[in-house]
Length: 237
Image (cartoon, rainbow, N blue to C red; front, side, top):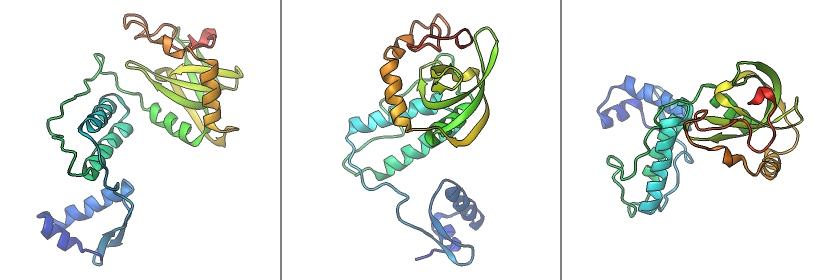
C-alpha cells in the first residue's frame, strides 16, 4: 500500500523535501520504488536480501574485506562496498551479533594510500560486458603504444592494479599496469567466446603470475610488473 511523503516525513521527523530527495537517491541506487508526489510511494519486493545467518567470524570476514575495498578501490567500488555492508548487516539474523560501530578487525590503508585511478571503473565494466577496448599504454620508459585488447580480469595487488587481457596486436595474453593505461574507446563489440573460457586459458598459460609480487622496494612491489609468465615486449615493461 502506498505511503505518502507527508506520512513518511512525520514518522521520521524530517521534512517532505528530505523524503523526496532520499527517494530519488534510492531510485538512483536501483531501489524499485513506485509512486509519485501526492499519490504515495511503495517499495517493491526484491531490493533487500533475505534473512541470512552469518556467524561472528563470517561477519568479520565480510567487514574486513569490504573495509579493504573502501580504503583502496575506486570511488564507485568503494561506495558500493558501503551499501553492500549495510544490506548485509540489515539482513543478518539476530542470532549473529556484531558491533559494527566497533569492529574487531580493521583493514588499514596501504602506506602509500594510493587510490585507484578512475579508469579502473571503466575497465571493470568492460570486463563484465566482455567488450573490446582501445587503449593507449605507457611503459616504464615513457613510450606509448596503441592497441585493442579483450579485458578479462583486474588483479588487485596492494600497491598496483594489473589488467589481464588478450592483446590483438600481439595475439597473446598481456598484462598492463592500470595506472599506465588510458582508455581511448570502449567498443560495443563483444569479443568472441566466453570470458570464463579465456580466463581458464590465461591461468593455464600464465601459472606463475603471482610470482610478480616481490619486496616493496622495487617498482612499487613489482619486477617487470606486466610480466605474469608471458614474455613482455619492450613497451610492456
